[in-house]
Amino acid sequence: MNSYLAYFTSFLLIMMGIYAVIFKRNLIKIVIGVSLMESGVNLFLVALGYRKNGIAPIYTMAPSGHKMVLPTPQALTLTSIVIGLATTALMLTLTVLLYKHYKTLDPTKIRGLMR
Amino acid sequence: MKSDMSTVVRTITDFIFGFIIVFGIYIIIHGHLTPGGGFQGGAVVASGFALFFVAFTHDFNRKKPQKLYGMFESIGLIIFILLAFFGIYKTFFYNFLANSGSLFGMTIRPGINPGYFNTGGVVPLMNMAVGFEVACGLSLIVYLLYRGEKKDREDSESE
Amino acid sequence: MKTAYALIFMTIVVIFMFYAITTLHPMGSPLHSEMDDYFIKNAQIEVGTNNVVTSIVFDYRGFDTLGEATVLFIAVISVVSLFRGVKKDEE
Image (cartoon, rainbow over all chains, first blue to last red; front, top):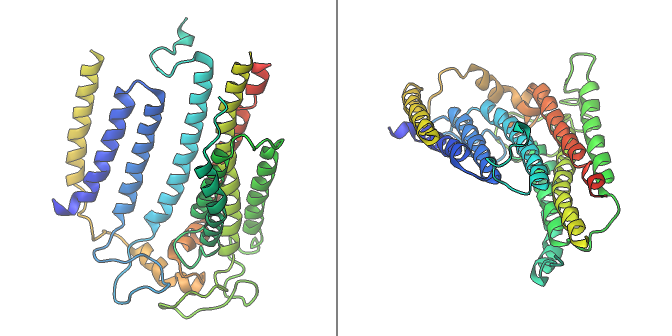
C-alpha cells in the first residue's frame, strides 16, 4: 500500500470537495469545494508521471546519474490549472451578482425562477 | 465604511511592491532555463498588483484603469499569435529561431550545463508575451471584483 | 431524506474509487514512456532550451497553449461584460 499513497491523497481531496459541494449551505463554501476538487485532479495528473529516484526534467545544474521524471503530465497540468482559474473567476462573479440581487448567500432561498 | 488600511500595511506595501514585480519578471524571462515560464510569472505579478489594490483603497481614484489593462492584454495575445504565424513556411508554430545564429539562436552541447541565456529560439519571446497577457488579465479580474462591491456599498450608504 | 440519499451516493463513490485505485499501476514505473524519452533526449538539440517542460508547452504542443490563452481571454471578457450593467442599475 505504500506505493499508492499519492493516489489516496488525491482521492481524499476529491472526496472533501464533493462533501463541500453537497452538504454546505453557503455559496462561497460551494465554490471552495469545486476548487478543492480541481486541486485533487491536478495532483493525480502529476503523480502519474513519476519515476523512482527521478529528478526534475531540467538540464540547468542538474545532479548527474539520475533518470528524469516524465515531463508531459506536468505540461498538461499547467493548462488544467489555468482553466480551473477561469472557472473559479466566473463562479465568483456570479456569486457577487446573486448577492446583489437576492441579499442572501443561501442557495435554498434563491428560487426566483420557480414562482 | 471609511476604513482605510492601517499604516503598517501601507508602509510594507510601499516597500515590498517593487520586489514582487522584479521577482515575477525574473521568473517570466528565465522561463527556458529554470522552472517557471509565462503563466507562473504572470500569476506572481498579478498577485503583486492585487496587494496594491487592496492596500490603497481610497487613494485609487484614477478614472478608468480597466481600459489600459484591457489594451495591454490584447497586445500580449496578438504578439503571441503573430509569433506563431512567422514560421508558416513549414508548419504553424514552427520554431524559426532555434539553432539559427540570430536573436535567440545559439546552439548548445547536449548535457548538463549552467544555463546560457541566448538559447531557446522563439520560446523566450512567447514566454514574455504570455506573461504580459496573464498578468494584465488577472489583475483586471481582481480590480473588477473589488470595485463592483465597493461601488455598491458607497451608493447604498449615500441614499 | 435528502441527507440519506446523499450519504448513500457518497458511500458508493468511495467504494468504487477504492477499487479503481488498486487496479492502477504502482507508482514509480510508468508503462509506456517512449514519447517522453524522445522529448528528454532531443529537446536540447532541436529546440535549444534547458527546460524540457517549457519546450513541450511552447514548441512541441504549442497549439494547446494557444487554446489555453484563448480560454483565459474569454474569461476576462465575460467578467468585464457581467460587471458592465452594475452602474446602470444603481442610477
